[in-house]
Length: 107
Image 1: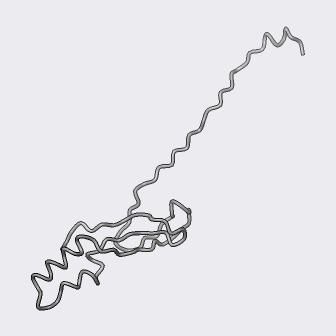
Image 2: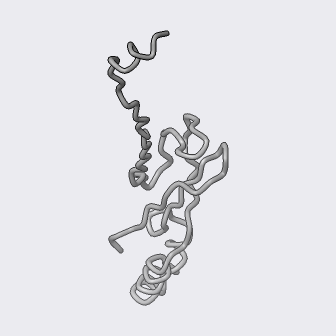
Image 3: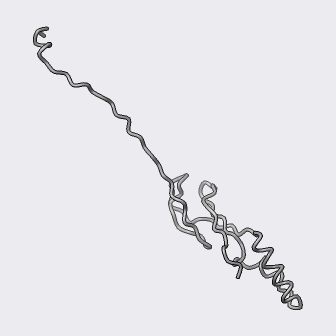
């Protein structure tokens, strides 16, 4: 190749752009019952496993029911009903925590 010919050629600078990949995880919209979704951890289509946990609202409901209806022994109802419990959702495949549904209303 001729050196003079190389001087006449124009060269373009090749810049290598870095492609940034931003993975934004939305807040998982979980409810009071198991939800069908794609697990953000193992990427499998799953039905969440819902664990119902007692919360301060559960204990408060038991206290109120116990005071108002003590003769009916209603104070134990919040511990057996899902209505006053928070719901924690887990992936049944990878067993990772996916979200929690907290109860906003007492009654």
